[in-house]
Image 1 (tube, rainbow over the protein chains, first blue to last red):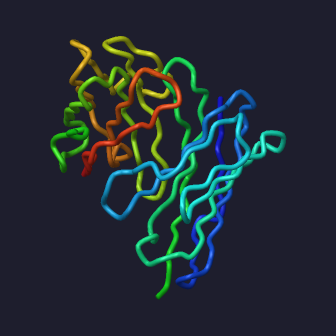
Image 2 (tube, chains in turn red, yellow; image 1 turned 180 degrees about the vertical axis):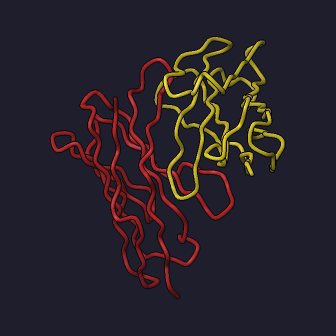
Length: 113
Length: 114
C-alpha cells in the first residue's frame, strides 16, 4: 500500500521568511495530493491540492510542487505570518472509487514574531 | 452550509468498556470516512463508506471496532472492548462522490481510555 513520509517534523521560521515542507510517496499510481492545516485542537482543513497532471500550483502565499518521477511533492509558504503556525499534513491518494487518503506524519510549523 | 457534525466531543472510559461515536456528514456527501489520529501523528483511515456500502475497511481492527452507515447518511463507530492504545481523536470526514474532491473533517471525538 501507499506510504507517505514527511520532513521536517518540526520547523521554526522568523515572520516574513519562507517555509518548505517536503513529502515523498511510494505508490506511483497516486494522482492526487492535498495539503491540510491543523491548528491546535481544531479539525484539519484543506489549504491547497495538486493533481498529477500538474507540476505546480499557487494560491497567494502558498504553492505546491510535484515531481512524479521522483515521487515527491513540496509545500512552499512565503512571507510567513504568526497565523501560519500549525501542523501541516500532506496526503497522497488514488482518486478512484472514493479517494483513500494516506497522510504523512505532519510538520509542526512555528512562525516566530 | 453546515459542516460535519460529531458527538460526543470528549469521552473518557476504562479499558474493556465499550464506546460509540456518531457522525453526521455534510448534506449530499455520499462518501464518509472515519480516521483515527493518535497524538503527534497524521490521521489514519479506519473505514470508508460510499453511501451505505463499505469501500475500504482494511485498517479497521475488526475484532473490536465496528462501523455502520445504515441509511447512507449518519454513521456510528463502535469500539468494544476498548484498549489503552485506542486513546486518540476519532475524526469523521465526508466528500462528494466525484474524484479529486476535498474531504471535510468534523471536530473529532477525543477518546481517553484509562
